[in-house]
Structures are given as C-alpha cells and as structure tokens.
Image (cartoon, rainbow, N blue to C red):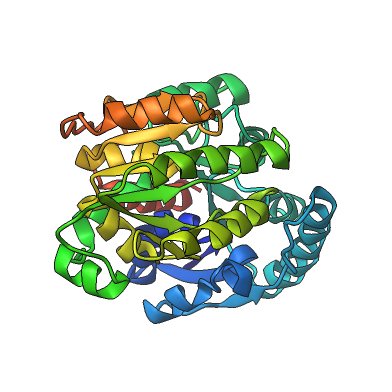
Length: 371
C-alpha cells in the first residue's frame, strides 16, 4: 500500500481536504498518514484539532510550530519550528506522496522539506490568483515544488501550464469544498438557532473577515470598523462572526471583534471556529455572506447565497454572479450590502460539480500505477 501523507494546518484547509482524507482512509490500495500542524494546535485559534479527532480520522503525527502571528518576525520563527518538526516527522513516516492544499505560509516549510527529502508533492488548488495577499506568492512557490497538480478550474490549470512550462500531471478537478454540500448532513435552521442561540425567525448574515497581508494592520482594523458600522445599522438582522485566521493582522481584527460584539450580544455572535459542518450549515441558512473569505467566492455560489466581497484579498479570482465586489470604505461596504439585500438567489457552478475527491484519488492511483 502506498503511504499518502495529508498535511493540514488550518480549519478552512481541513474542511476542503475532508473528503480526500475520507476517501484515502477508506481505500484498499492507499494508507492514510494524517499530519496536523499550525493553527489546529493553537488554543487562540480554537484548537481545531478537536474537530478532526471528533470525526474519527486517526492523526498520525502533530507538529507544533509554536504558531504566533502577532508580527511578521514571529511568523518566520514559527515557520522555522515547522520546518524542523516536519524533518523529523517525514523521516519517521517515509510517505510515498504528500498532499497539501492552497496557499498558506505554513506550506513553504512543509513542501520545501519534502522537496529536499525527495518526497513528491500533490498540490490542490494551485494556479489561482489572489493579488491582495502573500498567498499568491506562496501558492506559486508550492506549485513549482510539486509533482502532481489539482487545480479547481481550467483557467488555473492554464496558469500552471504557463508557470511550469508543460502540462505534465496537471488535472482540472473542481474545487474540493463543494463536496461538503453533497455529502454532509447539514444542520437545520432550528438546530442552528438552538445551538448558536439565534432567533430562527430573523434573517442571519455570516461574517468572515481575514487580514489583507499586503496592507498595514491599521488599515485592516479600519476595514473591520467600517464593516461593523454597516452591520450596526441593520437592526433587524443577526450576525454570526467567524474569527480571522492566523495571518499577520488576524489577531488585531479578532481583538476588535471581541471588543465590539459586547455592544449587542443578542445581534452579534463571535466564534473562534464553527467547525466545517456548522459553518456550511449556517452559510446555507444565511441571507448573505460578508467579508473576504474564499468560502464566499467558491462555496457560496454553489448555493446561490448573496455575497459582498470586501477589499483586495481575493482580487484575481473569478467572481461568480452572486458576488458583489466592493472596497474597504464604509460607503462602499454600505452600498454593496444594500445592493446585496435586494439580490435574488443566483446559483453558479463555475467552481465545479462537487465530485472532486474521487477524481484526485483516481489520479493519485494512476500516478503510482504508471510509475
């Protein structure tokens, strides 16, 4: 059996990898090695390793990278700890293939360790473009160090062909997060209302605002304040806020949310992490999505949920017809939200059909069979 090592470092990334993990775990020809690191092991970011444990997948190893995103220097130190931990872990596990997803900075020490140790890498969601964050450069660097490529859409596959210089082992498979809507038993509105202490008869908005890592912390906090002022002005709604990720500036955004939600705890609910099932269940029941998370760009269109995408973090991605793009100022956010509230459900399947995991696993098997 070929040993397939899937490495996850964040709640959002695990949610996208979920069905690839599940498929390999249950496959008779492949052996799953699940390695957990990054924000999963941080209490400040919800200690989301517990969600993986609750789902029953055996965790092969944990690599504590002593994550600290208070400043850029601390992030680099964390990456160093990750590199040292991965060296020992990969030496112990001797995987035949490493599988990673996306564009988070933790991937740089992970994939560079695999490159030096001669372990091939399969990269999911390469070839995308997001100009407003360092994710863009990270994603491209990971793609250049990878052997197998699983872009979500054909335009991303074409970017990879130009970058790499050939089309070897590049397979367009769709975005993996869409599979959750087909395979999870999502929670009902009544269940969510009870679980999250919400009024089921009111409209709900989902808010996820991550930092833009190419602008200052002050500008990121200003963006958060502008969004909150718009939210305060909509009296009849309840807002569920999912905290920012572990990028530079995320702690400051989260501190702002922790301070202001106390102004009206009935209308504003703040969570470090909802877990994938609860997050997607709430998205499905929402009247709209606000912020700059990739889930608003990729997953929300699959259900036609209206989205306001704020700022430049996702600049360069294809925007489906349900997404309204706006700047970071109060006036721009207010105008976009006003427009969104009058928008009908607009389903868009640009990012795939929800059957990505089986395609990825089939290509991995073919790769070893051809070798």
